[in-house]
Image (cartoon, rainbow, N blue to C red; front, side, top):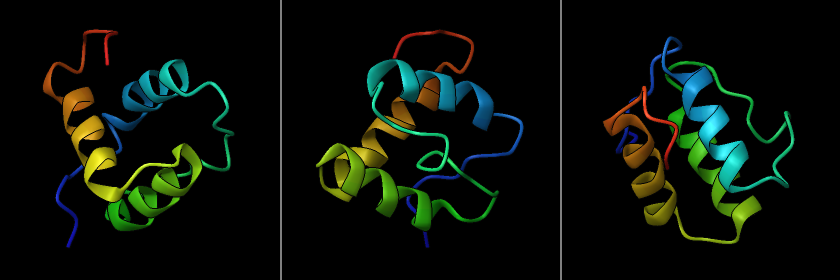
Length: 71
């Protein structure tokens, strides 16, 4: 089970934040379906060359204040 939960409603904002931080991520890298957090975490960890814990931390940080553009 994933350590973070992202709703389909929040994903577009999180996606924008990730693209700003990691501009080399493609649309394919950022494909997400609600409930598939583990797959997303694995993909992002590989693409940004970080471990899964860092990706989870980054996603949680993006979700804390979803209306803020900062990551």
